[in-house]
Amino acid sequence: MAKSPETEHPNKAFGWAAKDKSGLLSPFHFSRRDNGDNDVTVKILYCGVCHTDLHTIKNDWGFSYYPVVPGHEIVGIATKVGKNVTKFREGDRVGVGVITGSCQSCESCDQDLENYCPQMSFTYNSIGSDGTKTYGGYSESIVVDQRFVLQFPEGLPSDSGAPLLCAGITVYSPMKYYGMTEPGKHLGVAGLGGLGHVAVKIGKAFGLKVTVISSSPNKEDEAINRLGADSFLVSSDPQKMKAAIGTMDYIIDTVSAVHALFPLLGLLKVNGKLVTLGLPEKPLELPIFPLVLGRKMVGGSDIGGMKETQEMLEFCGKHNITADIELIKMDEINTAMERLAKADVRYRFVIDVANSLSPP
Ligand code: NAP
Image: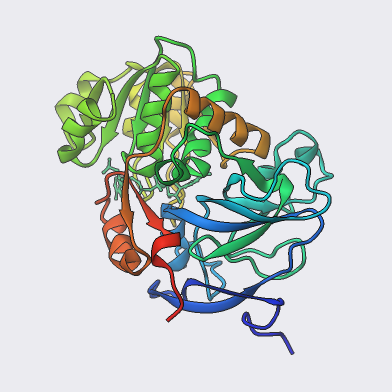
């Protein structure tokens, strides 16, 4: 008979979990494996709240495996390291992102693209390399193979730096891969949420002109005056959208819901590139005519590999890029999720895990 989450491993653990597709999170006792020779045990300080956490607790994609302890934007302190661990020492400040396992021998892993390994395991709602279920960062600690642990640069704050571990790498990686970093070029960022607002900051650090394309007119002032965007387009304003046709070299699309690609493709110049990062629960329609007639390209991208994630953290440290956050206590998470569903967050919730998570 399968063991219960509380008894399958030797070490007691505590966190908050969704138990069914209502998505309601509540206290949850489970267990963590012993620290192995290649492992780092991390006491969790902060954990960001990604829209993927919301999609997963609500079973938007149909593969949630309850109970789900979400959380993959983790910053904490290494409290134990295995005897083969060379990169970390006890007391180091470390990060854990979306991936906590991969086969480490396939073509993707050999190219530092663990994020595309067919056997990659996610930090939660996945099966780990030991064959047991993974539980994420809405919890007091986590045990992770050293390959999937990141050094957290000294200058980056733990709370507002935590969202870089998913939001940061998810926008940085495609900008590098698809060649969207040429200074002076024009980047559109569709959807001004967790991913989108970091894309604005990273785009500016690359020297791009950045326009936000948003469904929320009330975000204009902040986009320009707080986040540093050069201009702002409301996607439901037909006149302004028309005036912007053919002006952008690249677009990063972070919209979390089903939406039309046609207007976004229209904003691109000939040879323009649209990279879709959002994961709506239903397929998007791909309009062929603007692609063919403008030699445009649509691509996708999934987070990033470990080497590139470390590179992104150093880049953000150097350019003082962090997320704009609303720091919450663990027991405020259900209200935060309701607000996230309504695009009402400026611009990432981060849970103060160490100061607010305690077993009942
Ligand atoms: P988020 O903070 O909720 O931001 C999403 C933004 O999309 C919202 O702030 C809103 O921006 C816009 N939006 C939401 N509903 C909309 C609607 N019905 N119509 C038009 N615009 C809408 O989410 P996030 O954490 O940035 O994640 C965004 C998406 O990326 C999610 O689907 C997530 O699962 C996915 N994701 C993908 C990867 C990857 O590796 N590819 C990694 C992480 C997350 P405005 O108010 O400005 O319109």
